[in-house]
Image (cartoon, rainbow, N blue to C red; front, side, top):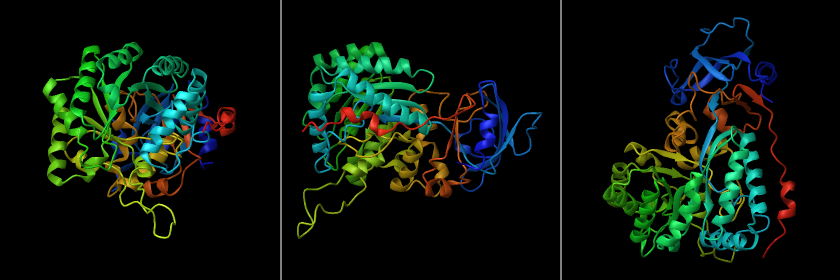
Length: 454
């Protein structure tokens, strides 16, 4: 455990606890209001006072008197807001043991999930896997999650009530939002979209869909935008999750939003094909996305896993060839245009991604490596906390702010090179000012659900 663990445990022991974190390392990009001077990585040394579950003060080191309160010396250890995971798939999670992806390719993942959904996704099956995933996220230090739910009828009648029950059960611990995910064929059917909106809308759902290089992409996207507008719902779409440069649904989405005057929040996930297009097409598309106010979420771990898996094998039959690209979108270029960009977990232990555990620190660490979000890291440290919170309309999440709930992670790492060099399983998770001793659930809990269904 971290060197300060015993002191923090003694100080952060209950909802009325008052204490001071001395010499914390605070990323200034994650601090609302004035922050002390930062180093070249954007990290400031500061004291943080906590009282009655809230952040009471943030000030330069030594400026906050103990006044009889316990003092926890962090010696520069980082304090980060709890994570906001804005693109996940709680309904798919943890089915890998029973339904693997046979070759790691995107279409194989689609087919495997479809087969598993049709054979196994009862309310109890979905509920147990969702709860397992949420307990994992809670232990790692996540405060809010948006999940896409497969909503092709009749699955929407099963998964959405389960989501509503799960959201109620987790209220106060993890804030949950959900998106109705359908395929492009369903997006062409206004009646089917109305049915999905009928179920998802009253539960606070978001209209979604998945579309890439599709012959009728413009009609499909127009239908989804119209449905969302008619029901007063936001939009969150999987867009162009492919290496095909002819996939330009992101541009079509932006054009449709601008042409219709749709006023809800719009999120586009993946946007992989943009990185495969010529510079003129990229610039034109990003300009439209910026004008339309569309936010983008990149899923670097899942996309690097799925993208550029080719049927071509190494000569001599030694298996598939080595991938040639990372499968991610133009995060830096979008940020430079003022587009709100975040990164997120995406799938966990299912045919779309065999790994993952809804761990925001893992997403940040791997995102920095895959997308090269360094030089300096401090410019992008908000991509798993403040930025997604703003995109999802969660104004009090993902930031360190006086008056906000004292929800934070504390680690012994004093900077990003230390933070990303180790997994930091010994992180301290503090919620409402109280140190939480959550334990990761054992995968054996799901063994009875995992008999192979091939």
